[in-house]
Image (cartoon, rainbow, N blue to C red; front, side, top):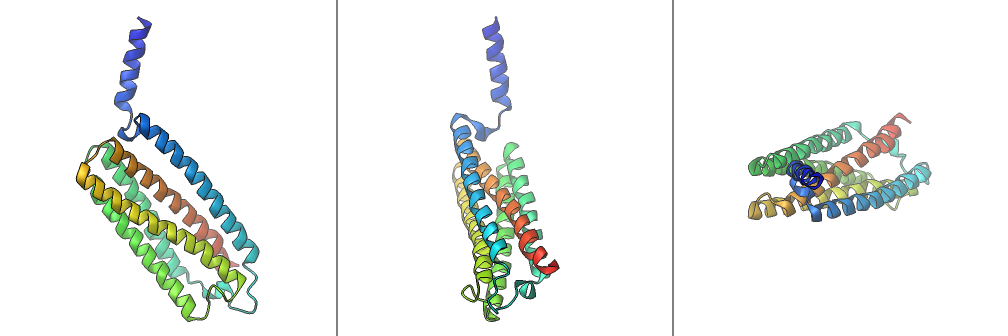
Length: 208
């Protein structure tokens, strides 16, 4: 009798479990959380390095003189909005809506591309003003921190495009659902990191 009740509870749990959390999916998702932990350590080291070197301008331009909050505010709005649309994509996936899932992923990719476009423009502008990575330790730390985040975003865009292609080919099933979910986790992580970049680098730089 107890065994039968256990099987009923297990069946109910299986029915309510998201598609990406099958037996293999749970291991992959746990492994990805561990990867994010190591990536967090990487960014923590870059933030610490930036804080140490931000005043080491060696006669070069002070970073606060270069920053313009208009562009970086637009970047922030774009990335935070992309986090919302990424969440909507997973919501549609849970509803089994393939068209909605792909549509919101495409919108998220477009917002990410706009973010990268503004960041590249900012870097090109800095270099045009002579604020190159080699000019000072402060600029080296700045380009390394912000550039590393930008590379992560670029990789995330390529990752989501590959997930979209697989969804178009295979539809929503445990493997593609897991890939879409993990890509979403990665994207949300980058949004959180950017909030710290915006606050600790740009906002504190201007106000300081």
